Image (cartoon, rainbow, N blue to C red; front, side, top):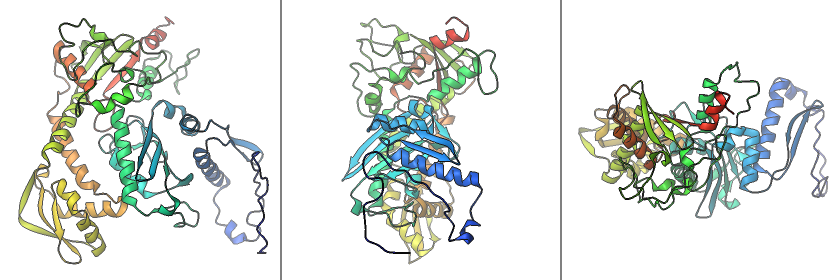
Length: 498
């Protein structure tokens, strides 16, 4: 309790610092009684140290607990490459192979970091991290933004892996919301939320139809002879990655807006291979039109196996298309793939034509808490763009005049209450958008090629070409993969030819 003159801290200089904690609760024995088990507290300490390490990749971290070294993270090169290496050391090597770089800036707020592919997901949100000006924080804004950005690709019970870093003027963020500085409050939360959602959506669109490396790895584990629990095979050292048709460089193809051109930048970059560099890393000089069903133009001689998804060779069980590529085999789930194509087309059509509305015979009044009603009324313009016409009706009620025609007969009061809950929790009216997308998804499912339908060779090749030209076609609407690619080298290893 003694107050003294402010002096420089111990261990100044570039050689680092050593922190040793002893008898932490010597003066507060009552507080000690509320501590959890040693294992639980040790895990909490390690988790906090990992978050600090993710925020400072150029600093090495070592953690010793009771004389035992539990964590050792060497310093990495400062910058995106070093940061990704540090994230991989903490979140797993698979994250490095399946992460997309995020780098956007808007009105003085810079967003960087890495976001996992939709097909690389988890059953909980434990691997979602947000850093503000180098400080690890836990913020509900991130949860809502991720839910909005990945809504098209993941079921609600699946969660992406992300590590995002925000840099902004310190005067635009309040770091004193929580005693432990674990929460922050932004002066302009809508700007930050919009930057995260927009940046992630552009990043995912730029990934094109790339799928997670773990898809091919899981398939190989299933095929591998003499497999044992845990996937270990003596003498076999897997080296998984995602080199496949998504690493294909588009050469002279410059797609028009709306035709899947958002993925061109990502496709121009070589991605790590499953075990070897793809033979299709460079696209031949040939005219290619997105969505073409019959291959290249007549005056160009081009082998279909050089397409990213190759040439269809067979259909198995009237459900799966087997295609041959220059350096491997691709297996496509025809129903899941076509469902995604139809869904993406419906989204474009809905965006171009707007959401049609139906007027209620009698406008419905929905009673809400005054604060909830105010939040809903403030989003009236945003809701109108989605086909829901609302207006304030007194201090604690909302009047609904029109609803989206796609929803048909719907529980208006329940929908408004869900929107109010979303606005309170996430600051976004996600409930209505998700319902519209769910209807579109259902319609796409019923309007797509069904499993069990026999396809002709031109039909199978047309489906493959459409997948190549459609963003996000690597996963269905629930985050499951639509294709598996196996490299020829890995197939040869299965048979002992390598």
